[in-house]
Image (cartoon, rainbow, N blue to C red; front, side, top):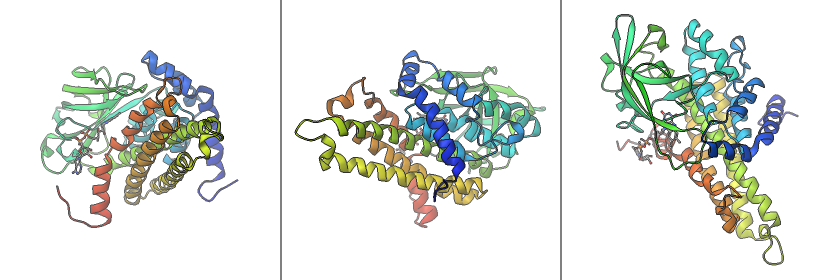
Length: 386
Ligand SMILES: Cc1cc2nc3c(=O)[nH]c(=O)nc-3n(C[C@H](O)[C@H](O)[C@H](O)COP(=O)(O)OP(=O)(O)OC[C@H]3O[C@@H](n4cnc5c(N)ncnc54)[C@H](O)[C@@H]3O)c2cc1C
């Protein structure tokens, strides 16, 4: 049945992915995290079923859909307790940018593998001295004959150890300072001069974050994706899906935590009635549900605008969706932990580690304050303080 917000095919996709997620569930991810490895089995199976590439063009093995479909995949896997973080990066950012701006060779080389999950691409933009101010990035690409030579440092880049390559955001030598004119390079994992050091994160997740050092990494001309001076449009073609997918990640996690809390509140009885009958427990859970639903509506709006080719409209909505989802997720997880009392902090119930994980959606890929800045300036026309 087509609902107001969702066509029938989306509801069917949601159900199918949800069934896959439930087969793996939280127990699977908990084991994977304990073993310190990526969730390969789930990734491969989701790839074989066509879920990882739902947004990529059919002619390259994808599903021919958009970020609307891909966000459903991530949300439903998350709601079952086993989200795949690299979906935010590999098909959503890298796949989209290559599909929209890549050369025919890049599309042939990368898209089929990104679509079926046999290849993974990480994405590196964050730098230690730039942080939220991407205009300050200094990773520089200089031409040397037909080649490019890349130098710089990145931090917090997820999944580099298992990714076949990383899409690195740099700037060309002649655009070294001032407003960022980004250019994007595919850097294979084992390129000479490309070093990675794991960052010791207090985060219970299957994917690790890395500091990357690019020390005169020599790349062929074909490593440059799109135009050297295509500017921010090309970059945001990847960053908007990233924000929408982070919203999906957060909404999935929030739903998972809320589901656990509601089930517990229905059963746990310490007076005459289950704790869920006390409004002090029930109302915050109801609020969390409402806020997650609202965040999903904004995510769906952002995804629809993006898939319809409205990059500018999608930008504002993607920011708002990421903000709303990050806040709703952090609140839902916090309330879920609280609902379980002492059990909220036990390994058996596995909710406490989500408190840290939920914070990620408030920090990355763009912090809540930078979204509030965006809305203050771009939407409301208020002056800038920085
Ligand atoms: C788990 C995880 C995975 C990540 N994966 C990737 C990845 O795969 N690739 C990648 O490139 N990056 C990745 N990141 C990095 C992430 O995008 C950055 O952490 C994020 O953009 C914030 O940058 P920062 O950490 O340098 O914080 P900073 O920019 O130093 O900000 C610190 C604080 O100051 C606030 N602040 C900064 N400027 C302003 C301002 N003008 N007004 C108000 N407040 C301000 C921020 O909101 C924030 O609260 C990841 C981060 C995490 C935590």
